[in-house]
Length: 143
Image (cartoon, rainbow, N blue to C red; front, side, top):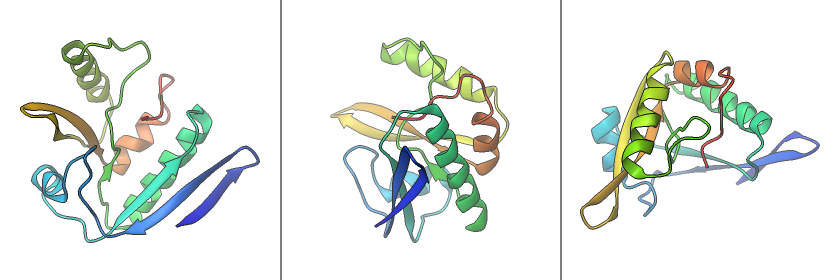
């Protein structure tokens, strides 16, 4: 693990490791089914802040790393929501889908099981999508 200092108030951890299954986001097979390829290595970026400026900086770093890795896709580990999205699953998911559809680039939904028979999603996105999303006035980091 390496610590990357963004500025005097923000830093993040960078972890290079083989891809693995997690209870939160599902398996590498889930990613391969959605993205069309299985990653050989994963780069995990963790920001310990909900600060929008730090979130934008981290996402720009993700976009640059994705481009340098033959335009790899970025698994955000959660869904992108606009501010004030409804909290119930059905309306929240519909709001999320409408919001991301308004940006250029590729956005995929990777399903994972949260309870037997109950699924939720994480967004898998392209660098082009990230470029547009971080410029959106309603940008919020995925938490």
